[in-house]
Image 1 (cartoon, each protein chain N blue to C red):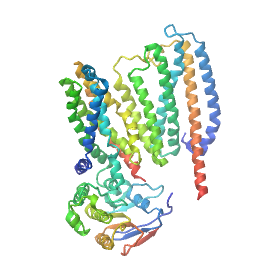
Image 2: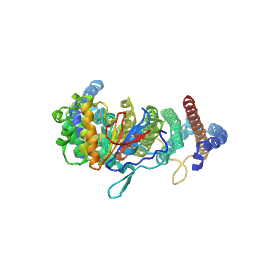
Image 3: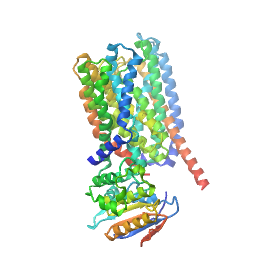
Image 4: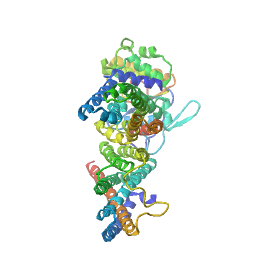
Length: 184
Length: 237
Length: 218
């Protein structure tokens, strides 16, 4: 049992920043929202523009996930990784603009094994753009990023929310943008 | 029935049941063994026929144990009931031991009868593979650290095995086998003389009761172990 | 789904050639057994079906524990699971990719190794066909084991223990096919193998998905 009596609501265009000490359950909360874990009691639901309420595993269809690990295959180049996820998620390309937005254009043909931790994190950010899903769940997105990288991350989240998306971000550091806070 | 699935109620119920079941088990086994030795030797097999009273019930109950384990696994998966998971886990070592007992006694019995310690027919092969299924199941429980995940993974394995067992048995059958065919549950009535049937039935009853006794004991032990562990963890905090 | 299959094939090809490893193992066993058993070609021909089937199966199981584990460890499995493919479809795609990179190459190599056992040509044909039809079942049932053990560190050892008993019908029918062809009998084992393989491929994605879903929830 990690937390009880937890209740929150995030509107479109808003960012929810989930904060708390190590082990407080930030990752578990994100996994609950994603549908990997099921709550012992209570519900998590998503409401779309058409007022369709989505619960259970169906939520996954609306989510883009950025986890602790960066899902970067050592043997695939950055471009290939993004192309795979674009094909898998059926979101139709836009690889180049994603690479550009994450500052990866120079590195696009480099295999994953040669990337630094910060560069891999940027690949994850680019992946969020490529997957084109309205709800972003981000677990420590600023970890391993340098100042430039952090700016890029914050900028991407801002742009996503400005376009009507939602971001739930578990983080130790502040994103530097206006957000609602949930402290575990 | 599911009312008793509450651990506290189960502990109460089982504490009254266990002595009775155990006593009846011993009584049945004693009676079965007595009649088994009192029965006349078979005209073909001589005194060796008495191994039947140990071997056959072991094989039956070993298979029953797997069925119970699979059923408990299914309930555990569907109802998410922790007691069902514990029941499945507890049944496995008993089933494995019974299977091993069945294999060894069968081999000892078969050697004088068939001239060989082993033969690869449907029944023996699937029984041997049953032992491996049990061992794999136990290994999986031990290998996964998280108790709840181990329970559900093992449950999936038990069910896949349950589906596979009849296929395995069927796949080996080429028709001819040295092993005894179906002699009891037949259309024309049992083939075995009643002087053998009675000890056999009593031994089967005894094995079943003994299995349930030990099974309940193992479940109780597991529940108590978990309680002790929880108390220790709570004490630390 | 094709995207996932192609990506897995590409990864298998690049990541130190697991197909090569499987083929090498297959060839090694097929070479060692005649050395151990002796050069009696008639004896070798009779055991060829069984030996080659077991060797192919073990070779196919070699890299199976990494089927889901690699993606699980680097976080790819989370992202794939949230994609439009259901876990059942994902499992099917991974099984297909695994077969294409291990079972199929093993099948193609088998006639060459069958020669080492002195199998006549109609039996070689039977061996090839039985492996072609049966190795998908090995990948399918192996995937269930891979899903169940993906979180276990030393899962590599427990996976064969779990999976091999479940695969025994495949070995029995597969080797039986070769023996029937050798003896010139009508082949009853091949249709049974086909049925078993078909059932395994259809049902396994569900069990595999259940196992993966279980392990993702942590």
